Image 1 (cartoon, rainbow, N blue to C red):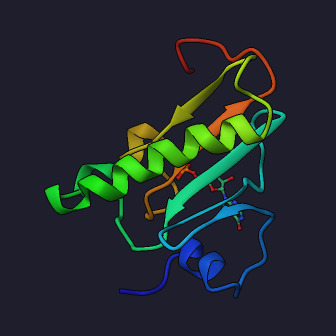
Image 2 (image 1 turned 135 degrees about the horizontal axis):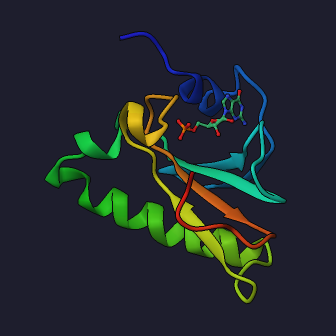
Length: 114
Ligand code: 5GP
């Protein structure tokens, strides 16, 4: 399978504004922000989308969500609040087939999503 855009960000072939990195995860600012703070948290290991995650991914998924909350805190969103979003498939609005959790904050977000 050919490399996804996000694999190219992980390997630094494509630049990104990285806000967090550890052995298993990378977080960087979205190129087309939908809120004053818009960060993507991704696993370095490829999982195409949440709908294809396996039981063996349980620990990684837990780490992803905990890191997202920690990054949101570091970016000053803890008190004002924020939203975590995982888009899955065409109707979900997924455009990059590499699992990612959006952190959106810095403004009041409408509900339900359009
Ligand atoms: P999805 O629509 O798959 O849930 O989210 C993919 C996200 O990746 C979009 O919000 C889009 O703006 C972002 N994105 C696409 N290409 C790039 C890029 O080259 N760099 C960064 N930082 N974000 C990107």
